[in-house]
Length: 267
Image 1 (cartoon, rainbow, N blue to C red):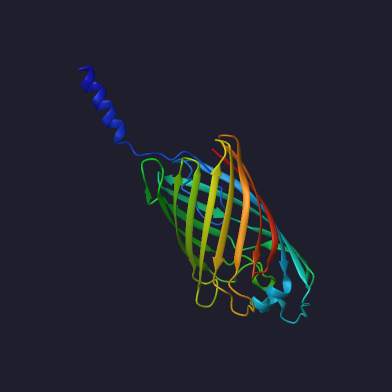
Image 2: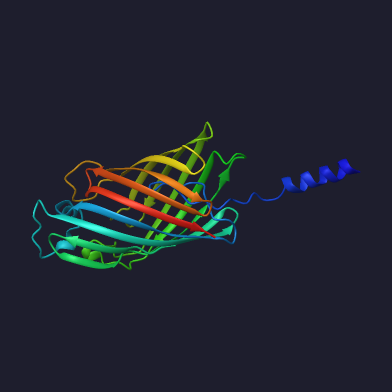
């Protein structure tokens, strides 16, 4: 009888859905298989600072400087604060929203501040093997034209984004991810992007990471295909809180350098 009760209990546990432990995504260029628990929130914010080549921006987005002379040495700095929220709707489905606020210092147009394009989206853990890897996460995101596209602070139109990320883990501490996405309205005919990330867990609380992203060349650009690079670390002082620091740059793109901080709390 005791064996029958034990077997029944084990069977009942085996058919229960696997609930994801609340964890924050550590990468910037790719997604991870980390979701809030069902009925739980993750809230946080990104703090980004970027140094940009304003002459290059004028080549790929000339409407921003209509009526202005843009010097070849013109620079632009942007500080962006992006509060966000994620909510676990189901064991493998998360909804999220992001509200970016830009503070711009332009050599050509002076200081500007305001909303960029607000984004809403959903992520689905479509596949995850027994030990949480490999995994597949398709996602959909829509950016709304809440920003000022005449100041390079938004697209000026709704932009549906469709993507899928895949990843795995080796030796229980090395995490690998690939992410491909299509921005339907980022350019006249849409734009494809691809990214890769590597994360190394040095301990249960501390990880280091490296990433790269490539995208289609923008119309008007006189340079080659743009490539972005990012590196950083993720730290969890307590289970619910994560603090991540990043730094990056690019080639054949408007970005000369950037630094970012992400703070996230789950409850």
